[in-house]
Length: 77
Image (tube, rainbow, N blue to C red; front, side, top):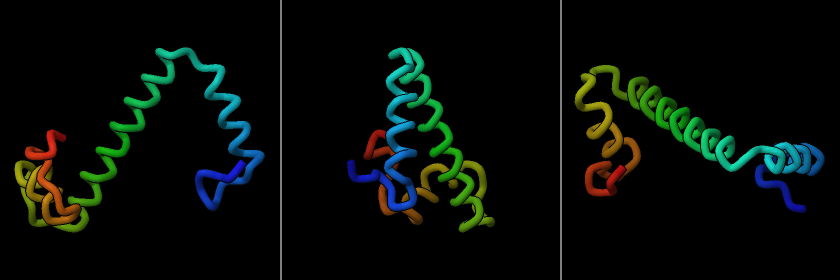
């Protein structure tokens, strides 16, 4: 089994798969939503760090366009 990440051992990855297989579909979905929300918060924190002068309105859209090269409105984010 090839690790999904270069800093993850095969043993750790097997354990992760084992633990994930024990979750119910509802638990897996909740985990996916939680991870998505955490990622969103990290992106917003990064944008605030990169563009401290930006106001709260421009960070979500304008910051994403400048920092990541896509418009969340046209990408339906």
